[in-house]
Amino acid sequence: MRKVGIIGWRGMVGSVLMERMREENDFAGCEYTFFSTSQAGQDGPVIEGRTYTLQDGDNIDQLQSNDILLSCQGGGYTSKVYPELRKSGWQGYWIDAASTLRMEKDAIIVLDPVNRSVIDQGLATGIKNYIGGNCTVSLMLMGLAGLFEQGWIEWVTSQTYQAASGAGAKNMRELVNQMRIIGENCENLLDTPSTAILDIDRNVINTLRNPAFPTENFGAPLAASLIPWIDRAMDNGQTREEWKGISETNKILGREEKPVPIDGCCVRVSSMRCHSQAYTIKLNRDVPMADIEDAIKNQNDWVYLVANNKEETLKELTPTRVTGTLDIPVGRLRKMNLGPQYLSAFSVGDQLLWGAAEPVRRILQIILQHLGEQ
Ligand code: HSE
Image (cartoon, rainbow, N blue to C red; front, side):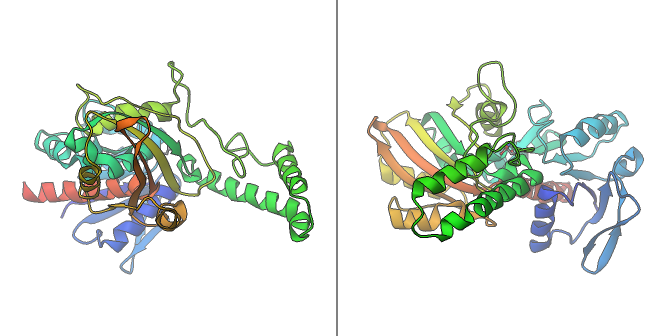
């Protein structure tokens, strides 16, 4: 029986992963060990009536005894433990939700509905590191991979509307707390129907600008506002989140030698866990809309088209609709006034599912299947 170690199963991405693994009955057929960096020896998850005792996530010998290790523990853990593990001679498969190893030559960024052939080639040639992609990139590709596969894309811009969850659990709490304080401060004005709207507006902005307003995690108010900066600065004026668009997309697609230009502005908005994106796509020819629609909707089992009208858009193309599902709606699809080769589209996806836990969950099953076939 193959041995699989999971580290970081209690955090936000790890919890979503555990939920999905339970739903898909993934725990059957393997021997699982759960590791913790702070609670070794204590009770871990209960699966099918069995309580797993937590092992020490810093103990290289214990980690080493697994065929596959899957980490949702974060980049700091990967930087610390991964090199030691390899140095110790461990030859197993390393699956990681963190970005640390993504761009390494001996790592594959996993998004199997989009790059199964790249993954299969990696497995066949002995690659041992399989890393989940940046959420924005994965969610874009789950929506638009059909167009990339057809070879129709000359370039893409993606203007993002990224959820609080991408910044972490503490940030989600901070966002809701910000909302609460805005609501509480405004309550009396809001409950009086005769209040002038500009008085309500003034009240809200005064709340946001109050130095006591909680912004410890985001660094600025997000509720009733937005933050057009995600991650750290690159030398060329992009943020790192924006840089990932071109580098990770082309690596996932296995076309680093001939990259498709991708750029845009990444913006944090007050959505809880769904990232949305507005695309401008320059096609390399005037492709008929019916062909574009077919290419998008037939690429994978989760993407679907939303009719470009108000009713369907409000019903289907929002974080409220998509949260907690694997659905990837693509809508607002139309040729632009710029010319027949310019396409506009909008997509929404759950940042914690296809953006984080699901590609990692699936690669574990793919690797197990590969090992079973050897
Ligand atoms: N970097 C992403 C964000 C999250 O901040 O939304 C994970 O890829």
